[in-house]
Length: 198
View 1: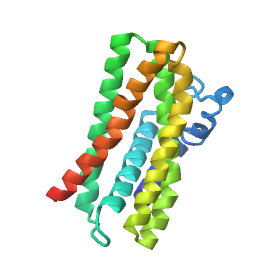
View 2: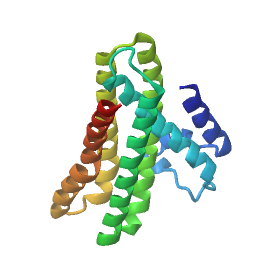
View 3: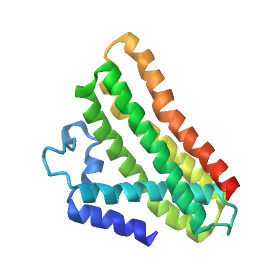
């Protein structure tokens, strides 16, 4: 957990506003754009490590039995989260290429990254408490609440981009189910299968 915190702090130090301005992106008039500040690859890499590691730690606490946490299980779940998110990004790019929504895709992807950062920043202190308490049931409730919070924020930010006609509502629902809900289910399923093999 200390390494994850160090990644987040270093990412914010190298690129000021990389995390703090993510919260401001929820307000339309204060959207963060990468044109305002140079995008630092190292900072983004560190923040990506923070996101993946935080989510993997939450999955470990939820799916592993009490006092059954191992570094191998954590590393395996980090790999699962990374693979699913990489496949999701490739699918997003395919949708962008197929439907030619490039003008909307990049701002939407920035919103997604910002909301993912906010969610993991909320999840991190919850994980510290859960590590102290050591309750698998409590961890599952916390992860469920944070997942619902993430989806609600994402629905709020993306609906204005996609919904511009009645027929677009159907496409938007298909998008949410296939490229947002399905990856979450995929992460949970693959995590359980991976832990069963370890």
